[in-house]
Image (cartoon, rainbow, N blue to C red; front, side):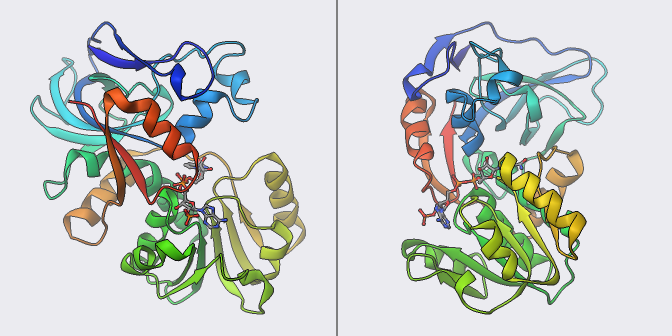
Length: 318
Ligand SMILES: NC(=O)c1ccc[n+]([C@@H]2O[C@H](COP(=O)([O-])OP(=O)(O)OC[C@H]3O[C@@H](n4cnc5c(N)ncnc54)[C@H](OP(=O)(O)O)[C@@H]3O)[C@@H](O)[C@H]2O)c1
């Protein structure tokens, strides 16, 4: 089968189209014929080992995992003999969690992974764009346990996590302010934001407005400044926090009435099924900026790494 393989950390050109062995499903696994995947912000970080600490987990001098890609949409070609939830021919989408390997024509995954039947009302390219941002935003918003009517500000509202967070916060009844640049104002409004602040026109932390929840999806806010824009018992979500923000967040949570949520999320079947149902009801939509063929993976990585994609970048596999 065709796959995008990388054997060394580096620029997008380390991603090479190769012929590799097609996998065989174990007893509890499904074999997915991948129709689409996506390039997410985590992918280019793994490709170039940024931050350096990536190497301590994924290989010190060379990547241990040779095929990247953590999201997929496709069709089940065959199933292991113990599989009960899915059948050959089912269209499914989901997240591989830490297994990766969806930059390929086929991928084996355990049936109890973060996998759901694909909504019939969206394409494979759209479905592959859902799990990364959607499940991340859902995980943190559920953890924050914000009540309907409370005020939330989402920074980076036009990215993968941000565009999902705007839609989910509205779904849960919050009053949503999105922060993005001028060219993305219409997109963020169309996702349901009650108000949009253009970050090129000014810094919201400089006025006296307070929020119950600030969700910074892109780690671009000053920690101390945005803390001042939180209500007394407000919550800050830093989905892309580095080590300094994690330490600051932990300290704030134990020494004040404000809470800071950070950390790596895990992907569950429950969350992907929740998103599937929202999509089927027309309450949640995929935001796809560009679509590239598998052969142009390096170009897709180059674009995503610039940090200005609108929503998601999908890859058509076959
Ligand atoms: N904790 C976890 O387990 C977890 C899971 C998934 C993702 N993450 C992390 O979450 C982060 C966000 O991922 P993502 O895929 O959503 O990012 P992304 O899609 O690459 O973000 C791009 C968006 O950010 C906006 N942006 C750039 N600079 C901005 C600024 N100064 N203020 C406001 N918006 C700005 C861009 O809009 P403009 O072009 O208009 O600037 C663009 O739409 C990543 O660091 C990722 O590693 C963490």
